[in-house]
Image (tube, rainbow, N blue to C red; front, side, top):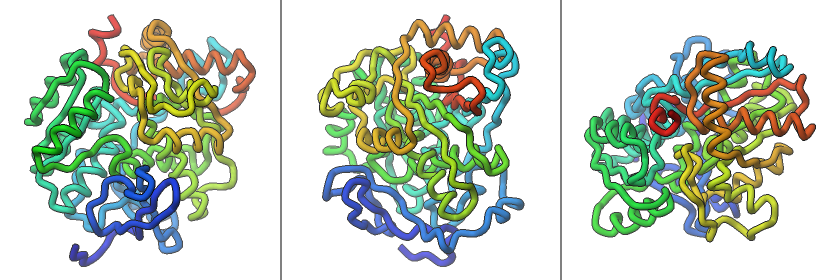
Length: 391
C-alpha cells in the first residue's frame, strides 16, 4: 500500500485476546492466533487536541485522526453521524427521571447506527481495492452495506433471514445488492456466507470479523462526549446483538481519556437483549460457559436476534469494566415501549430502542440505577422500518 499523506494516527491492529500485533497496511479479517476480533490501535500521542474539531464536518469523519482510513479520497460517506441527543421531557416528568436523554441514531443514512460501521468498513475495503463485499445481516446492516457499496462502486452480497420485514429486503435490492434469503437467524446466514466464500472471491464484513466496523461505531462515544460538553452520562443503555457499538463506545471513552479529551469518570454500560435471544445474559448469569451453542428464537427486534455473538468475550469484559450488566426484555414490552415513546415524545423508534425503556424502568425499580443519575438511551434505528412488526 502506497500512502502519500495519512490523515489518521492508526498504527497497527492487535488480537483482542492475546495482543499479538497485525499489520494495518494489509487487508485483515480476525486474528489467526486466537480466532478473535482484531482491534485498531492508534498513536494517540500524535493525535490532535480536541480543538481540531472546530472546523471539521458535522459527520462521524470529523474524528478522522482516530478513524482507520489513511487517505481522504477513500472515505465513503453519506453524511453519517452527529445524530441528535434529545431530552425526553414528558417521560422525565411522568417517571421522575430528571436527567433522561436519548441519542437518536435513526437520523443516520439508511435509518440506523449501522451506517457508521459500514461507512468505515466499506471505506477500508475501497482503500484495499476490494471488488465484492458480503455480509450476513438481521436487516439494517445489510441495507447499510448495500448503500455504501453502491456509493463506492463495490459489488454487495447480502444474506438475510427470510422472515425479515420486506422493507429491509427492498432497500438492499434498490441499492443494487445481490440478496440471498435464508431460513433461520443471522447465525444461519453466517453459515451460508461461509459456504458462499468458497466459490465467490469476496471480503466478509460480518460483525467483528473485520476490524473496522468497530471503529465506525465507536464514534457514537466520541459524539456523546462532545455533545455533552466533554462529559459523559452516568449510565448508558444500549441494545446488544453483535455488540459492536457497546465495545466501540467503551473503546472511544478510553481513547478520549488517553488523549485528555475527557476526565476520569466513565459511564456504566448496560447491554439490553431480547428475551427470545439473550446469549450474553445467560453467560453472565453462569447458565452456560459461553454462547457458542446457544439457540435463540426470532424477535421483533431483528437486530437483537444474534444467538452466537463472535465478540462475546469483549462484550462481557466491557460490562465488567464499566460496572454494568446485561438484561433481557420481552417482545411485548418492547412494542408497548415503542408506542408509549411515540405518544409521549413524538419519536417512532426501533423495537431495539424500545427495549431500553422497559429495561431502564426495571433497573430503577431494582435500585441499580438511581432516578437522579444522567441516563442516556441509545436508540439504534428508525421504527418506520418495523411498522409491519409493531402494528
